[in-house]
Structure formats: C-alpha cells, structure tokens
Amino acid sequence: KAAEMADFVARSEKGTTVVLDLEWEDMLSDREIKALVQQVLYSYGSNRSALCPVRLVLSGAKPGSNTLERLQKLAGFPKSWLGVTILEQSYIQHFASDRDRKRLVYLTADTESVVRSFEPDKVYIIGG
Image (cartoon, rainbow, N blue to C red):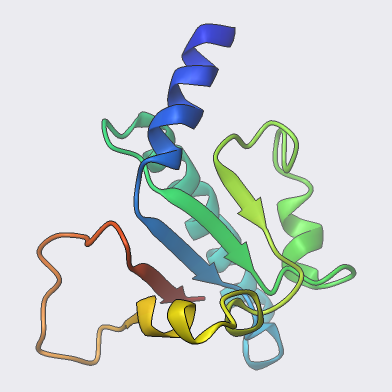
C-alpha cells in the first residue's frame, strides 16, 4: 500500500498542474456548493485512478467557508488526499510571478477552442 501511494505521488508530481478554483462560494447557492464538493470528490477519485495523474490544486479553500467545511467531512480529507495541494489563497496570488502568470490557462465551456492535450508547463484553471 505504501509503495502504491508513493508511486501515485511520484506520477502526479510529473503531471500537469490543474487548479480547481473554489473562490466563488459567495455566488453559489447551497445546492451548487454541495454539487461543487461532489465534483471535487469525483475529480480526486478520477485522478487517483488515472494512468497519468495531474498535480491537483484546490485554491481559495478559506477556513470557515462552507465549501471547506463540507470537504472536511469527506473521508480522509485533507491528510489522506495524496497529490493534492490545498491553498487558502487564490490561484492568482499563488502563481504571482510574471513567469507563472504566462503559464495560466483558464478553462471554460464558453469557447469553441478545445484543449486536446495538456502542456506540462502550463497551469490549467477550472472554475468552481
């Protein structure tokens, strides 16, 4: 089990960075927050079983927020969630250098452009 976990962490560290932006809680209904937490759980589970996992980052996970409180009720969150970085700050604050800002790609359904593959040096943002 320990070797399997170490292998997953090593593979995810080689993967592309994907940020789930949790900063928009104040614009979400309680039902939408519940759905967001389920999407985070699904994303984590899918990443754990992926052959080429990503480095998963949860940004804007502020203490006392409804989203973080719901996440903390999930089994093993956050200590057992391998390959996940949890940021209290926004992704824009975390990736603040000019070099980092040039790496950011905000994914949205409101475009005709389709990402067919990840570029390893980019940081892909998915809004919550």
